[in-house]
Length: 312
Ligand SMILES: [Zn+2]
Image (cartoon, rainbow, N blue to C red; front, side):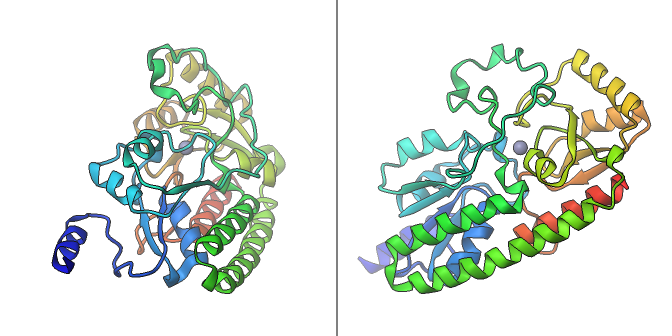
């Protein structure tokens, strides 16, 4: 019986490095969510991540083993707000008893501006595939780009872990408190950094509308995106691109930012046509451990430094 159990575990590609043992089995949707969960749960939980580092959650295609991972979980942490469009069919087929925790709950979602949603009427080809409403709702799902929102995540994570593992409730609460202090420090530092950009130059052009919460918090404006809306899975039209070129020229936009998990070809062409520099930022995923965004806080520090350096 034991041997069979060991075999079954060995066959599963997402088995945590350490055997789960009695520890709560916890799943996180993305590497960003997983890092924050790890900061609170430490080695008291057995954590698996669904979307691998370097993969775009907007267009992630789950594998059969992800169904197994979810069916064995007690809690699945997601950003929510329609971000993990891939997850709903997985949860339905997993047949487990995992509790789904949407970390965006409790956060006031920002609605994307008309500029960010430009050309939102040419989604006709998507049909029913977008039941979750990601591209249509107008709610910006990228809550983590403002560290103050991540403080809501830490409370939700700490409370949920304590509920399934009350023995370690003190450990989770202490970690959440310590991490919130780091988030406050990150926020204060980011505010200082962005304040060094002359106000007229605080303009963001990105591949899709990823930095809305960051822009709102630190006084930047998302003047336009190459792909309309808040998902990198949408498509741009020639008219939109021409209008964006005009805007880049007339506003004197200093840089075009492209995500580390996005296809850069359209952004490259736009940069070439406008003579504006192209800069890579971290968007939907952390980096591998030896990269600049191995943790959420490193990810944010890297992005702030990159954006400030490009716009100043
Ligand atoms: Zn995105």
